[in-house]
Image (cartoon, rainbow, N blue to C red; front, side):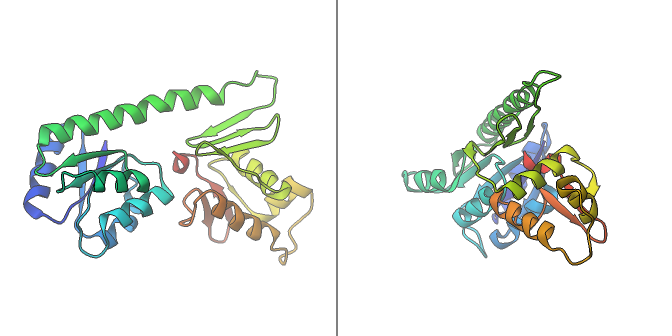
Length: 238
């Protein structure tokens, strides 16, 4: 399991990396807060260990940035023993805390616990996708996204998401062809049975709205394939 460690203390980082790499974890080190989001989006780790006092960008800000684009488990390292960091971190979306100085075996146990929680949620998601009868309206589940076609309901991260008719139709067309690139012409034909005239920007506008609704600022969930069209990425929604 891939872990992104955001820590500027070289000695501590070396200790943590050596220890965790000896078990089931592969650790990538980031030493600056202002580099964390870009590195996270590039490597897509399954867990994040985040120090609070970082050069560039404060750890709390990094936590908020990561939570805005992903539900990845985040474990915060804090040097303070009062409740301030813990309360603030929870408000920013952190999942757990370990006080410094870090005991590697404690960190290992906490990461394993977070990993078990994350893995335990996946079978529920897979099972939910099969709730509909074979000849009934399908239910689509991709990570935190759930679409029930019987009543056109869309749930994102546990909250109902109200879409316009165009947004819902576009999302459903993309989902039904997940993992495949669809051109603007193909999308318009599936949605309205009309051909793309080279000027119609309705698809691009609807894509932009969907990205805003589903926290897809980096276009990782609904990807733009330049010169070809758009692609719904199933793995990016977990």
